[in-house]
View 1 (cartoon, rainbow, N blue to C red):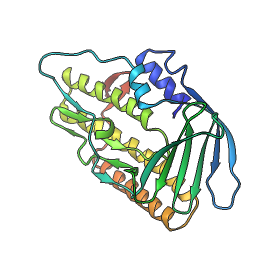
View 2: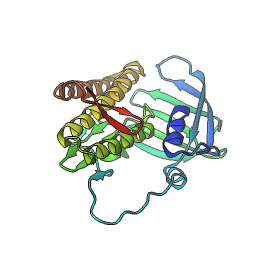
View 3: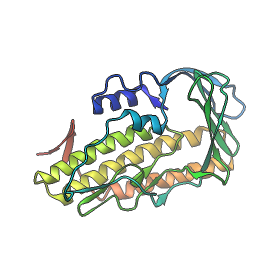
View 4: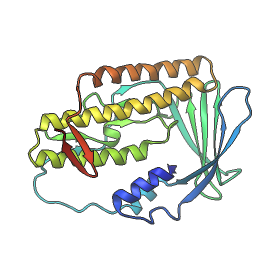
Length: 259
């Protein structure tokens, strides 16, 4: 599910103003998050796009022959994990195709996302089966002549729903960093900037996820996952402190050296 801001970002990056205009639209969000409280209903504006739709609608990259100047690694499994959450995805018939719904239970949470008038995905988080869904980050984000992006760099908790937009911003930064190195900027300094920006973004994600787990249903499961997320925030703070002040800023798709 992509928010309006995520759709706007993707349209802008790829110069496709009509991208996803025919995607299934969500107009309401129902939240039953605290034990004993009735569900809250909010107006919402988002579209639901599968990975297959996303790849089909985006422009195909040009093929390039010859040796690569830099390697960008986009697939992998980040090794540093904060939490023990697993998730399972199933399909069903939606009761309201225009509304997504999230509900907390004593040992996890469930997210209903309609993807058409007759179908919805149900994401069940908790338990011990399915795929790993806790936030994670690669212990090494860069190396000589390579950068990690996307799932090779980090995995976001689905509770926040910002993974796609963050991956786009990450890719823009990665391309700007490679261009800066190609144009003569010191590789070590640019790599340090890239790593620090990714760590800051991951920390912001953890802080948001932590607020959700602290404010949810409550109980041992919620406390354990909130504590694991808090350890991730502390881990990020420790690593971010080693970089010092930023030496660059991103302007559009270009990395600018600060005076």
